[in-house]
Image (cartoon, rainbow, N blue to C red):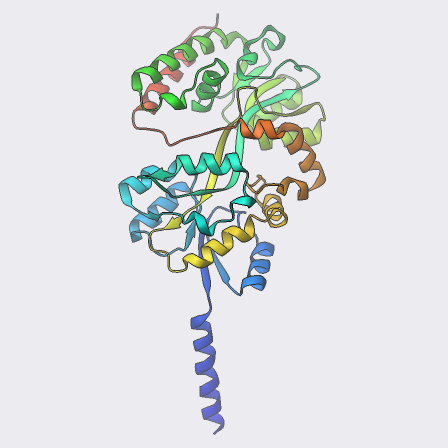
Length: 353
């Protein structure tokens, strides 16, 4: 009798475990902190199984399984359309199941545009960040756009990378739209040629071309560099040390990346995925994710619940009009990186004027 009761309990226990609802999340480090998972499970009863990954690994995992093994993935928005076109590893988002009111509208619109394949949307925005300007406002207060780095006011005290974000940023600052020319190789080459001339003319202003964030931070701390092109989080970190230094969204627009929510093609728990999306995009929950990930989310109003110092830094750098002016990276067509690479090589080899 006792044995029978124990066996029965075991069977019931195993059955309960087997029926427990689970969301299998393929994401980046910091995007699903334990305190958020606990609140989600308490509210929904759904357990969350987190696998940490990156863009290349996400594509590899989903390609190997034909889009199975996970219920929700978080690739960058410029890594979805190409992967879907080549490997069909995602399924379209049912936008009727997304609470759009929780999202910053310009980010939602930009992400939908950049993740659309054959008229269907495959991603909505989550975590984002930008590159723009880090400026010592006391020493270089006139610097407001990328091409201002070439002004006499900061001669010899400028730093940026010889990488594609610099080419893209300078193009926008010069009044051109490189993203609009992505499907026109000749036009894109023409734009890059004008940027090349500008960067060669600007070489005498450059203290050094940075390759590592730590090296750049030290150049700014020492005062050797007073204006640079770099990421927002680096500017805010320096602002904690020196109130004169901060991140500035350029007049022509900061350059933005977005990590999304995307549904793997063979998700088994699609409803749980939608519940997670709508849960974590609530402003107070999104602020908890910002504290963990270090970057802000596309949740409208979440900055109000951020830690006070970070909230002030964010709002100083990104008034609403600056957010709406962010230039979001679209997928890069084949061949453009070759054009950019040759331009960067020529800029590097050119003599300073």
